[in-house]
Image (tube, rainbow, N blue to C red; front, side, top):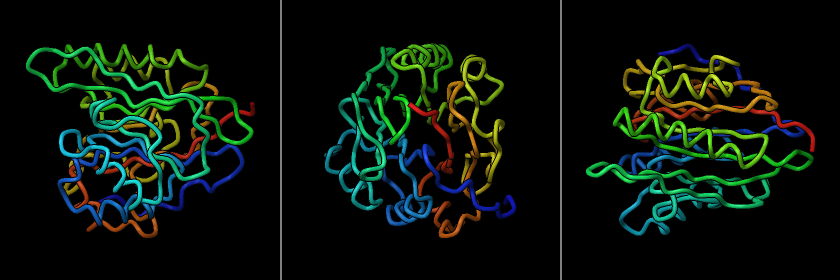
Length: 248
């Protein structure tokens, strides 16, 4: 297991603390999951695999209450799983741009939870939570649609479970246009799957040029985040990023 890191960059004006987390439809230890999210103290949470089929709105509401957040965008019906949660008062929602993606017959429905947001004193920016396909051809098309989603505003953040390694064609496409958070400002752990023995990085946070990545990685050793909770919460490890937005 990686050595315990120092604390991530502290809060400050125009700084956004963003957590990306695949929660596997809340099928594992929900209390452990809530403890991990609360300990990471995010302003914004990009969730993947929020429950889609059984009371999705109610389960998203439970997750928000349990983590001290509110639902901003996405969910079971509007984004096919991805969800955006925010700390009350941390960000202002200017518009919601959820998107259901073209579906290949026989494969799962996919979508983006996406919103145009503003921090106090910053320019508007988009945030998109995504969970991309296991099928390579369909997945590459979804990477292309992520770039299309970024046209909503000059500044944007994409976070999620990409189901691809950094040497894959879609990941390389995204990294050619955006900053890949962990290699840009490494903090904490690199690998996000699987919690019991992390060996691959398939979850990440990307940001457009103009956003400063101050730190990004898996929060091993962060006060309040225990390895037992990380293993029990879900089948992915979370990615925590601290980003600084330009003045607006």
